[in-house]
Length: 420
Image 1 (tube, rainbow, N blue to C red):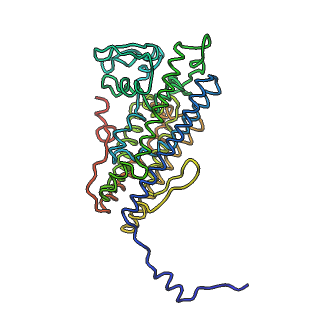
Image 2 (image 1 turned 120 degrees about the vertical axis):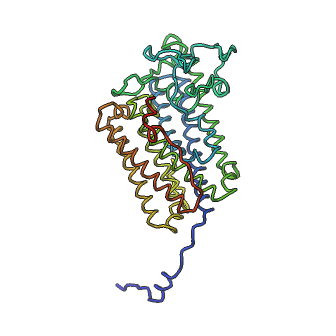
Image 3 (image 1 turned 180 degrees about the horizontal axis):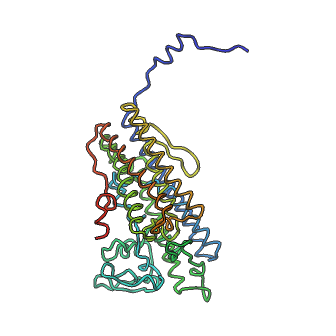
C-alpha cells in the first residue's frame, strides 16, 4: 500500500495560513440565532401542551391528565434554557413575569388544603379561589369573573392588588392546575390532583370542574400567545435583534449580564441557596410537579449554550456559530479554558442533582434540615455557579467592556437579612 505524505512545502503552507479573527458582530449573530431557535422551540412545545390540555378538557381521563403533565414537563426543557436571555435584555425581563413568575399563592386560583391558611396582611387574595367565586371585590371595585378568559387572567387577576405572589398566568399556574398542591412536605411525592377535577356531571370532584377547565384552557392559550410574541421579537427583524445590533459592545455586555446574573443572584441565590437556608419545600421553582431539578439543570445549560455558541433543538438539530468562547480564546486562551472548565463543573454538579432526583431523592427532600446528602448536592450546584460567575467577570474585563453589575441575593450577599 502506498502512503501519501504532504510535502514540506504543503505543510508550510498549511500551518502558515492564519485563522480568521472572530468578529464581535458574528458572536452576537449566533447569540440571536440561538434565542430565535430556543423561543421557537418553547412555542412549539407549548402548542403541544395546548393540544393536550384541550384533549383533557374535551374528554377527561387519567390518561389525558398524564398526557398533559408530560407535555408540560417537555415544554419546560427549551423554556428554561431561554432564561439566560433575561437581565441583559429588557424586552425579555419586562415580559418574563407573565410566563414564569413564582412562587405563587395558589389559593388565588383554586381550592387548597385547610393547612394552607387564608388571607394575610401581605395578600388579601391568597385564598380567593377565583374558580369557585365568579365575582369578587378588588380595590373597591366589583369584578365579574363569570368568563375566565386569557384577557381576564392577564389584565385583572395576575398580580392582583399589586401583590407579586398573585401569580395567575404562566407555566406555574398551569402546573398547579395539572398537579395540584404538593402536600408531602419533605416527604416523597408531588401534587396528586385527580383527573376527576375536570370531569363532568356527578363525576366532578371538588366542584366547579367546568370553571377549572376554563381556567386551564385560558392560561394555556395565554402562554402560547405570550410565547408567540417573544418568538417574534427574536425572529429576523424583531425588536430584540434590532436593539442588540445597535451597539455591538452593548450586545456583548447583554450576553454576559444574562450569564452572570442568572448564575449568581437568580439561580445560585434566590433559587437554590435561599431554599436551603429556609429548609422550605415551597422554595422549589416547580414545587407542584417536583420538577425543580430539571429547572436548575436547564438554566445552567442555557448559560453554557450562549458561551459555547451551541444549542440543541428539540428536534435534535444543532444551532451553532462563532461564539463568546471563540472571542475570549483569541485574547486569552487560558481564560477560555478556565471558563469552559467551570461551566462543565457546574453542569456536572447540576447533573448530580438531576440524577439523584430522577432516582427518587426529590429536590424538596434535599432541602430538609439536617439532610447532609441533600445539602451537599444543592451546595455543589451553588458553589459551581458562584465560581463560574467569577470567571464571567474576568471575561467582561478581558473583552474591554464596561463593568457590569450582576444581580445579587441576600442569601449570598447578606445571609442575616434573610431571617429579619
